[in-house]
Length: 417
Ligand code: ADP
Ligand code: SR1
Ligand code: MG
Image (cartoon, rainbow, N blue to C red; front, top):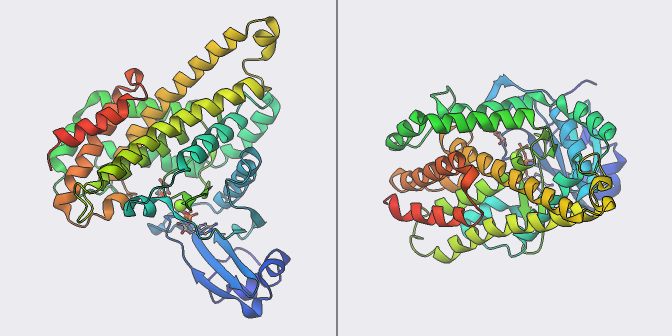
């Protein structure tokens, strides 16, 4: 049969013949199915059998958040599957295992993560995850380094780039929603009532509009490595000891700094929301310091891991050892590493800035802020995040790693409650 969206009622009959499921969770006659998708795009089912549980994720021919007025290709499941496979190889154990992929049905069967919770929900509750920065700094360095011309030959890189180039419909969402829509009155934008006095000057800021377009240009033109493409706090599932990266359907070749900046922005969104949560004013100071520590540590771990990979796994077409270490110029390789890392940091800040804006002004908001039900409490939190995003994006070329925590703490003081 051709593609048909699953429902909890039809799923057992449709998938009951798959050994990938029955071998793991038992016969379909005993299955219970619940649709749990809370993302913006797809169906997600938990299928429980007598032997265990699996996740069945299926793409819809449209954007779930908006409805069938916004069609979206089913082939995004193909790219999610291929990205999961590559991530599993590049940072083993950091993504859920894939048990089955059906291209026609746009469907992935994967490991059910338990007792994991979505990181964003944990941050809203104020829960610390002591290993998160280690896990994510390493994941970012490993997935991005090993997916780039630093590790791959030109042939392998370009063939893979050609494959993922077909994921342009998802890139188009990012190109519009992240880099352009926040900076004008786009149709699907929304914002908290009362935020208007902070939005008008932001949109009038020419340097910011230029910075956002420079980042869009970089996203389009700097096809350096396979990026996850949507690495926000809803794309991570965590326990106290583990972190699992899910949902890479936006995967495409893009800049090293893209995933880094998106993830760092989501830490900052969690930070700025803390003072708005009911009954927590002042009580979350320690947690806010923890989040700023995570911001700094993710980057530190990234730098350390990227450097280690640079020294031990630089076997691709870029910065060949022949020109450096093998020619007695190890110091030259180190200088080149420093320059590459500097470029990644500057780009990451640019992406961080625009992500802060689009999660407050665009279509797709975040629970960190949405959980603050009183608009009068939410507005100052969002205003601080907007101003942080503006400064970070415009000043990205002159900010060091230690400057961002200092800046956001200053904004807590200067933009009044
Ligand atoms: P979308 O592509 O629509 O954003 P996600 O991949 O983010 O969908 O999944 C939506 C939700 O389904 C997640 O927020 C999470 O609660 C749940 N989920 C997804 N994958 C898994 C998994 N492997 N194990 C457990 N829960 C999952
Ligand atoms: C219309 S899709 C909106 C957002 O949801 C996804 O998770 C991406 O972040 C996208 O920008
Ligand atoms: Mg998602």
